[in-house]
Image 1 (cartoon, rainbow, N blue to C red):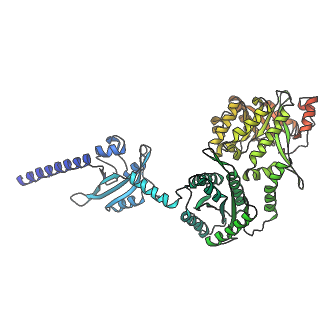
Image 2: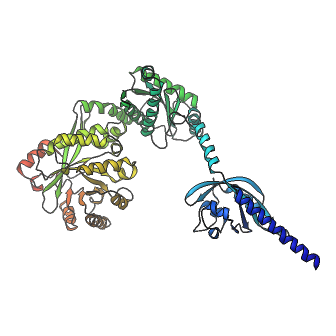
Image 3: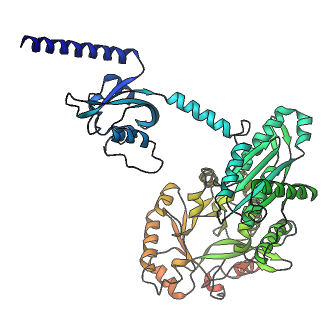
Length: 586
């Protein structure tokens, strides 16, 4: 009995000594101790552990992995999945094996940290597993440093684009995947860049390269990869061998780089030539694609620079027409081939014209009248949409100056144009020169334009509204998160898409939707316009739903400027207009 008592006292003394040593360790080291039971639930959280975890020690409980992952309020097991960063640690736990320096992400109070964990299984006197004990340390700074080093190894330090090694790996991976969509390689070479270095020095030359990289990045899509290969040589790879996609990207890059650069009072103008090769048609290996893209680049330079060339390509009739339209748009802008037609908004209760929507048309010398749905997308992708919008606005305001002051004019804005930083200055300058009250001007944007573009879109719309212009959301009901869109921006008008109106008499589901949209809009203080009103029955139903305005062939098709002005001289109601052929107004 005496021996057992002495042994118990010694064990207590030893345990107390261990506790003192552990407490001293935590107080004087950056590491901390952790302990779990056999079910992997945390227990005995120390003060140091609580400090690192940013929470009271009493709240540190539940599954260890779930706690690290940040699932504090809904403690649950971290599910197994591909690429799970906790998989190595989980396997050690499941196998009850010791481990050392396993680094895992830790979500602490909404901030991601990185912890290095070391642990060993513990057993009772009978050899039964009862849990884990171990040491943890915060290695966030070291991990971020390693990530930064890895990032720099893959990116060009001057421009922050991918470097040659990373770009070649990406291109090789695309070709190795054997994807049916193929790939497109664009080789870029700046025109007259050497003259800039010779004239202004390498300091300004580096600034130009950084600015060029920024414009290239803004001209490509998220899934495309751009790289600086060295000097003034850049490359872009697209995960698709669609010829029109490749040439559209090339057009955007050429257009944006051609705009003047300004650095500390110095204005610099350069250009870029681009050669394009498509896989697998122009090569199945990286070497073949580079060779053929370079040959195409030489042809582009021989063609006068500031242009692009495809390597020995043969296009079908459709692609040939699109390319031809790309070339012809510039000529159309210079030779006054574009013109504007106007379709009225009609107040359903009074039949008076409340406004006109401006619709651009193209009178091609060889193809006749070309509708917007055939060339607007090409204009967007080739960088000409801003010039077209400016033309439409100027023409429309010139017409508005000859109309009654209560008639508004509506102009459509392209999603890509809305992203441009210079949009407001361009449009506000036209409005100021026209002397038209900005309150008579309404800009129409599609719901998808507000949802899918970057923050500058809303900034431009807010600035236009502050100028006094009104903003309408067009094609409402065809996008996503419609209510969130209405709440996120103070629109003045909502236009119900014609797809809900065309079958309003025949489809039972459309009527309640239209009625709900009108009631919601009126509650929010928006003026509602229904597009595609083609029959008197459409107008009667919409009038009963208290829709403000209608637009469609029941009242009038799009009219040339001459007819609009003549009509306003005689009458200002829809009764004075001859209904057009019922159909789809573009």
